[in-house]
Image (cartoon, rainbow, N blue to C red; front, side):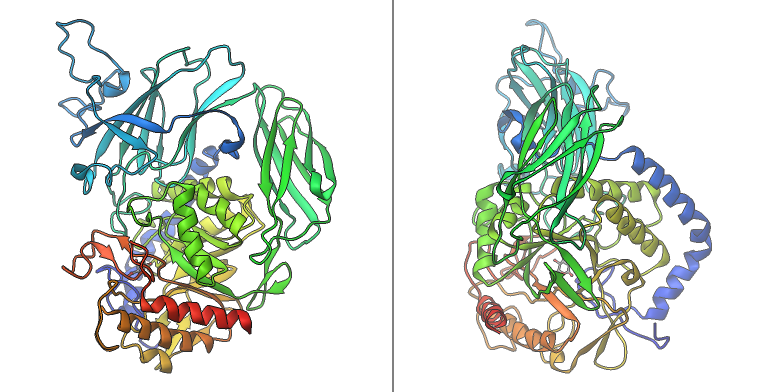
Length: 635
Ligand code: GCB
């Protein structure tokens, strides 16, 4: 790192990070803590690792392909801003679980208050609560959900209650008993409920709490709406006594004709014969699970490789003696060579756009295939072969559809801005979310990047935290590339240097820069060049400017479509001159709700950097980027 004073090129409007920070200032700031850190961090991470390994996700792979019942639909709900359904008046947990106990008044004299009476109103699940009732738009706190379902006890085998996601903390009760809790708003979780169900009128009660906390992942300050609730689908899954819990079926790292992976059984009959079949490719590979129910496999197969131009998916079945699951899987290889990214052995340039899980037209969190189809369709029409799913794992419909439609995906966890790097419990939360993200999407050909973090401030504790996450990601899935969206910093005049120490641990450098918006006028881009300390590819993971649709002026007037389009023109000129640039993700496909974007009549609590408005209107910058991507394809 150059030792001269080097201002950080600032990318965001956060008071925490948007100060023009001198490198020395950062070093000083962290030096103060270094003594304390050097003793604390190794210990902290060791503790965190121990906690995390005990919490390896044992999620059921491919829940959509399992027997069971959807629990989507109308759930009764009660807002509980004081947590009075959970804590007594001295803040002690209510012994029987409070509202979770599912009590009903016994007789007309019963004065018990913690109950869902028939008149209790309902919310749709899946769905954030904010956009369903005006009173909930800005609400941050607990909401209790309840629904009933029947389940024939005749069903043999085991039952799991599975949630696609609940933002942010969920406590789950079944028939009055607490079955577990989960923290993290964007990844799936499940609880076994075998033996707890009745034929009729089973009650599931879930307390979902979306309060923001400094020690959460993401932390309290983000740049998106804190949509709360049972935001993704809920299912009851029926599986046999011993079932195929999880599997990975992908090409062996670096190979284009060898399938490799593993299967894990859960249940008493751990030792079984299993077969992995890809009928269309004439492949059927037998394996045997060990005493832990685990089998690895690797076999040759002649396959048409998956790519954005030809998103070929194969039916794949994993068969054990007691269970069978079918999936739809694409096979492709993704590697790097020096500063190149190779898809199926050939250099690929990523023509991308970032996407928030903000629903087009109706606002709210994306949860359906229809939402996903609209957003990904817009990206595809713009000439993209790549999407950055910011800033947290999106609904499974997005990655499934990206597989089908042929879009490469960057998937990330909400380790965003100022996380508590020194707190082992926070590390454990981040690692847990990373594991759940990888667990869910490890068979999606579209997913080529696991991203560890976004715009985090430099410092030893942060680099240790993030490099530990990178190591964990490699351990869980060695087949994909590891990246992170880092902050650039200015070196010599007009030079941006990519020298984040985290770069050592990444396969591909991500970088967010806002030249022309937070950082100087659009023309600054014409003079700026980039230096890379690492012999690694760069993906410009963000750039952009803000303009509400329909706001017009000349190209020097901020907050107009003309200004935004002008930023894009200068940016694209600059980006083309970066020799090690292998892709970009413009910020962002569509305007999204955001409580920290106040400007009245302009932002109105929306971040307006979208190429589309939230109503699907195309801004001028859309056409600039589309033309650029078209020209990239034709050359
Ligand atoms: C960033 C952040 C992103 C913000 C964006 C902006 O650098 O990564 O989450 O929304 O800038 O619009 O400022």
